Structures are given as structure tokens and as C-alpha cells.
Length: 325
Image 1: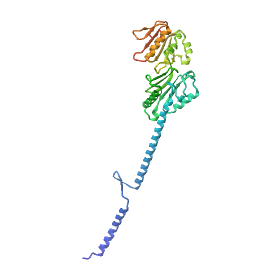
Image 2: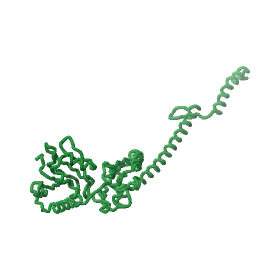
Image 3: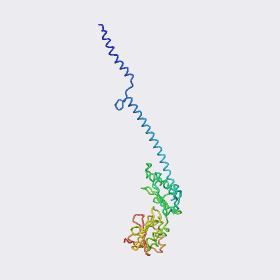
Image 4: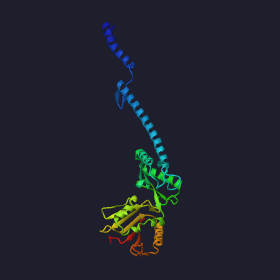
């Protein structure tokens, strides 16, 4: 049976668009999916831009991290400038001065420069234009470093340069200087220190009976002044292995006269014994032991007693009768 011409023509007309559609589909770029969603050309371009931006960000972060690492390493090298070659000596950052020397404007500039460093917080005690002490606090927060670790590095450097310390303290008998390193917070200090004989020689025994104004005037360069509590207070150099100055407090009577003096500081037990012996030599008398306090008492006017606090490095020399008793 012959197929009608009309059927053939209709089949051709119907198939043509279908075939053209198949051709276009075959020529088209394959669909791209991301997490199950079809991504068009604009999305692909955006993804490429985001990827490039991320790569650039990561590269910049890596460069900054590398630069910060070099910066931290360089700052850690500056720990060597805090101390000198000799035990308990001030380093090159301040010009290597000695305690007791005149304070110059250049030294103040050096303190300001180190303050802006970001790793150190320096302070300088320069009463009466004389250098009394220098303290540098380690503050490594600006460099995202462990402060305790940095403090340990400084301790190792000091030990390598000066030898082992006694409870974090180094003494230099020739220069009468003392260096201490404490933790939490990390503080490195250098100040003046005296031996037991010099400490006893500096005792203000002659202040007994004098007016508070006269005593304050004589010790003005040591910071002495009359307080609101009827006392005159000032400080003397420390003694032995410690990090403390010597605190002097003279109590005044209603008439404004000194009737009692307390001299207190921290030190090691051997130094306390040396002070006991030096004071005995000065007073030309031997002490007796106080059964209540465990201290030593000299029966010489105006009266002397040396007491060390229990389980503590703190000790106190009392001259005269304590008005609180």
C-alpha cells in the first residue's frame, strides 16, 4: 500500500525542529552543578573571582605571618641589650650606666624609646638626679608571645652571662649593684645594694629625739617627708639577696619628736645573721634571745630588737619602744 505524500511531508516538518534541538544541545557547554544546583556562566565567573580573592587573601596572610615571625625574632634578640657583661650591670639600651650616676636627658629619651618598643615597659627611679634603680617589665602581648616563655628566655640568658642566681637575685660586691628577675609579672630590676656592715652604718640612730622636720630635711634626697600619720618615712638601699629596698618609718610624739624607728626589708637568713653581728659590734654589746618573738634584743638605750617574720624573708629592726604596744 503506498504512503500518501501528505504523511511524508508532515513527518519531515515535525522532525526538523526536533533534530535542530538535538544539534543545539550537543553543541552547548555541559551544565555545571554545585551542591546539586545548576550553575550558569555568571555563577562560574563569580566563583572564579571568589577563588582568586581567597587565594590572594591566604597569600597575604602567609606573608604577614612570616613578617611577624621575623619581627618577633628580632625583638627577642633585644633581650640581650637589657643587661651588661658584668653581673648585675645595666645593658646597652640605657647606655650602660651605673647605679648612683647622674641621670641625663639622653637616658630619659632611651626610656621613652624603649616604652614605644611594645615588648618592654621600663621605669627609672632618678630621685635627686641620681639613678637609684631601673626596672623593665616584659609585656609581650603586642607580639602575641607567651610572656612566661619570654621571661624564661631572659632568665636563661642572665644565667649564661652571670652564672646561677640565688632565688632570682644576682649580686656584684664590687659595684654594689643587685639584679633581680621575678615572674608574674615578669620584672627585671637593677638597683643599689649594701652589705651588712654598710646597712648597719646607715641606720638613723641619731634621729631619735629629733624633730620630724629636721629628720625629713636630712633625708630629703631619699624621699623623706612627714606624713599625715605623724611619721617620717623614707627608703634606704636593700641588703643581701632580695628585691626590696629598706623601708624606714620614724614615729613622732605629740610634740613632733622621733620616739621610735622601724627599719624593715627582705633578705636571706645569712644576711640577717651578719646584720646581728654588725649591730653587736656597733653597740659593743651582745644580744639576748627573745623567747616570744625568736628575735634578738640589745639592752642599750634607746633599745634595739631584731625580729624576722615567721616563714618569711622579711625582718625588722626596731629602735626605741614601739608606741603601738
